[in-house]
Amino acid sequence: MPFQTLQVEQSADGLLRVTLNRENVRNALNTQMGIELREVFSPLAFHPQSVRCVLITGAGDKAFCAGGDLKERNGMTDDQWRIQHAIFEEAYYAVMNCTAPVIAAVNGSAFGGGCELALACDFIYAANTARFALPETSLGIIPGCGGTQNLPRAVGQRRAKELILTGKAFTAEEAHEWGMVNLVCEPDQLLTLSLAAAQNICASAPVAVRQAKTAIRRGLDVDLRTGLAIEIEAYNRTVVTEDRLEGVRAFGEKRKPKFTGR
Image 1 (cartoon, rainbow, N blue to C red):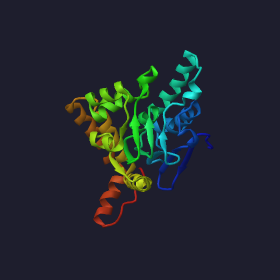
Image 2 (cartoon, rainbow, N blue to C red):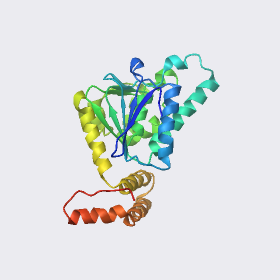
Image 3 (cartoon, rainbow, N blue to C red):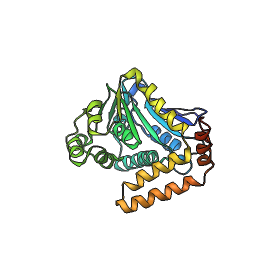
Image 4 (cartoon, one colour):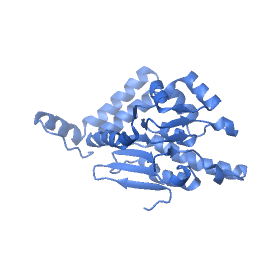
C-alpha cells in the first residue's frame, strides 16, 4: 500500500522497515502520518503476520522526528486538536502494543512526539548527533503520547521530572548514560548496527521472541510473584511449538535453526 508520509519495506526474513518520510519538515508528525502509523501498526497488535521485527527511523540525517507539525495545528479548534491527538494516541499505542519487537534508529533530533515515538519502541539505537527533548510545557501542553509514563520508566522519576518540567534538550550520550538509549554510534554506522540487531531478532524463534517481550512488559507492571507467573505462562507457550523442537535439533546437529513461527 502506498503511503504519503512513510516509506515502508518488508524483507524476506520478516524485517519491516518504517521510515518517517517528511524530510523537508524534519519528519514532523502531521495528521496523515498519524493515520499511516496507525494503519501499519494496529494490525500488528493482534497478529504479527510475517513480521518478526520492526525498525523505525527518519528520512535524511537531520531529524528522526521533530514532533508535532505546529503549522498544521495552528488555528485548530479545541475539538479539532482533540480529534487529531486521538489519532496520534491510537498510532503510538499501536506501536507500544506491537507483538513483534520494535527498534528505534534515531538519526537526528527527536523532540516532542519524536522523542515519545522513540520511547514507545522496545529499545533505541542513536547516532551521536541525535538530541532528545520533551518541550511540551513550553507550548502550554504536556507530553500526551506516553512521554510522562515511558520516560520515567526509562530514566527514573526524578530525572524525568527535570526533563519534562524544564523541557530542556539532552544528548544521545546523556540518554545512554541514563538508560534510555541502548547504543550510541557514529551516524554512518547507525543503520548498519540497527539492522544487525533487527536481523538477529528475525533469526530467532518468532513465538519465543514475542512471548519474551510479553513477559518483560507485563511483568514490570506487577509484583515479582505475579511476574514469575506471567513468565512461566509465556514459557509454556513456547514448549508446544515446532520451533522449540527445531531449536533442539539444530543445536544437536551443530547448524543454524530454521524457525517458522509455528
